[in-house]
Length: 403
Image (cartoon, rainbow, N blue to C red; front, side, top):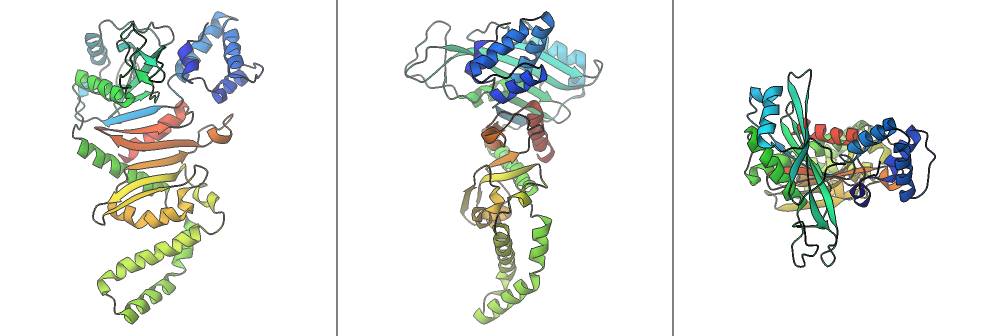
């Protein structure tokens, strides 16, 4: 079996995940990327069984990795949408020429086409998930040198039980239109991959007659509130620090009382002053020494960046730390905390999620950074390092629970 070139050139095949495959099948480790791929192909050529093992593994890998994942909330899902026969006939009517191939063997054209689909149910009864694979050719490269046509697969998933439609694809800024013949489009604007995702999601929504919010302001507001929930869930104050703050409550209350009395301050601002004082105590306890473990050991993810604004206070927040350091251990987190808590929205977040399996992921790849945001009528997140399917599902379910 020959591994399709786009899997290697577009970095779908990353070293940590190839090392795991070699380990699983007792293949001697190698050093270079090209040697890894040679070993995979050699394994495949041993037998038909091995070829099938590699093919199934590659079909899994192409959906994983560093991905740009967009999502929309679905409304008014009708009962018939859970019926296997209805779903299958709807897809066949919409895509009568679907070859039911796979992305490894499919011959791409210069138009997006449905390559394959899977209806996931229990014994052909209630459908709970539908998966689509679309693909086409684009030119890939810098604007001055676009001389290669590459396959660009996009995966669309409908999570019926959760009420979401999701797309996933490579985040690429070097794709250009390709008409099937010409390899030079100087002056053409590059393809915006998220626009592709939105168009395909809307196409599927229309086919099944689902409903989704089309007002971008409403979608942005809902998604920003969801991100605020993530902010609260994953930057809560550790119990030990809560205990320390509470131990100083008498001192804080006495200080604020004395301050307002001495300066004849407006009593209506006293609650704000008490809140500020408690944040001040929390801030200096949290940044005192190396407290990194306190903010990571009892949670499955931690915050490293936030962008937000408080329209009432006319403040804009943009705070970040390195991915090895929880934002909650920095001054920037506490300097913005009050505004974030008052505004109750977050425009963008970056978080580090714990991997389900860290084996073979070392150094830079060990921390799985996820960037969240909104664009148009959908929310999105990007996996900056290689994300396995379990990691992607973990982030998706986190969104579904908090949306």
